[in-house]
Image 1 (spheres, rainbow, N blue to C red):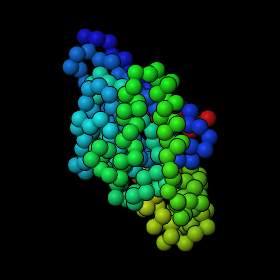
Image 2: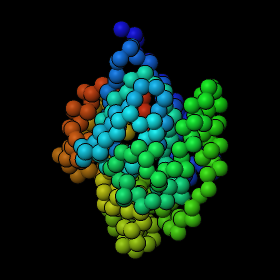
Image 3: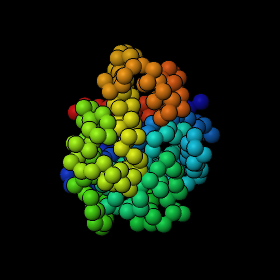
Length: 280
């Protein structure tokens, strides 16, 4: 049996592009012949991936699935994604809500909690040339330059509520913003307007976004210091541990204990890098 090797490299996002792209990442997996690894992704913003090598399989609790696609998109998510991969390499990036509005343009709620074959959905036509760019026999550094240059050169749609989208992002990152009314005060807009903008650019209602954010803060804290156990990682916005466990089941389809016991060969590295970058 060949020793398993998993490389996850997060790359710096250039200034200016970071309003639209929150992460650029490279993944390389080396396994024995015919072997596959299995893992689970937590909820997140929309992510785009280009696969080279063995096929990837992914599925969500709501029935969304992909298999054998070379260019995949996971829309904004409030559910986990279970996936498996063989020997392969992968380039990807994660769009911010503003990036979705400016670079995709389709209402985000139509793609919320979905897995998409980017070669068959015309909403993502303009991203397809990246596959051939990234398959070139170049070093990862050169491929990163190609990816970055392409994203920087993409025409951006006019976004009517750009300032409000950025304000909502800032509010969601503030642990003191705990309710839809807090969000309205922080953003300085009517709650109905915020509701419409959240559905269009973020994919979900403000209430669900706030629930998801406190859950993600908790899982990030656990990732940074698992020795504290879940009781030490639960976000201060939770009333009690029972409420946290209910949210965990809703967002991950399992209990915190079950998640902690899972082998996470890919997402363990991804989550540690995510948590580290958030702390920095």
